[in-house]
Image 1 (cartoon, one colour):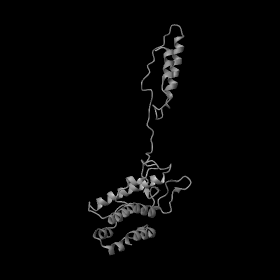
Image 2 (cartoon, helix red, strand yellow):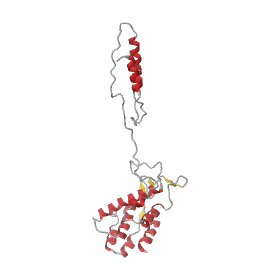
Image 3 (cartoon, helix red, strand yellow):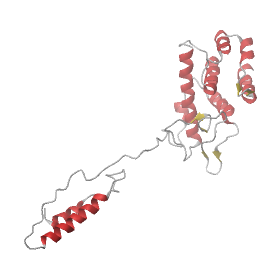
Image 4 (cartoon, rainbow, N blue to C red):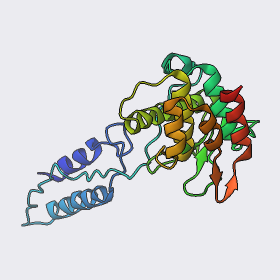
Length: 235
């Protein structure tokens, strides 16, 4: 390859910042190729010497995939979450969960009208909006809208529902039974910690349900949540 061809090749090489190479690219090969072209030019001008062809590998570009944090896939703002709302959960139940999980709206920026992660009451990973525990791979640092917060809540409620159905082994539940159990699983993670309460709800034993429904965290009664539960399900 002649030195002028090397310069032409250098001009024709793609820009590492183009859309064809979205990942960062090691640009050291550009300096190397320029030096090779200059060297070829020098050798070509010395009597009795002939520049050897320079073989340019097609693998000059070393594309690497940067480590990225997966963004949560939520419906764009402006689209109502009601269309994806499982019919098992009516709006009043969703509003009830929103109230007991975060009635102080902790993590909501009024000026930006966006929700941001905050420290969880019970410790562990951070929480955002209405009780969603952030898991590895999720990134909500840029904030989410109210619509997206509701979508996230409904998604979590459906996960809790699936957990309920597994734990009651597919037993058919009334709307009220399902809501009671979903509330507990969403809040506490499982029904297995509350065998007496679970059995009483399944058997329609209201007296025992009222005696067993109160929840505690760190040895302290969750008074606000317990009062809200009693108002919704016992009145």
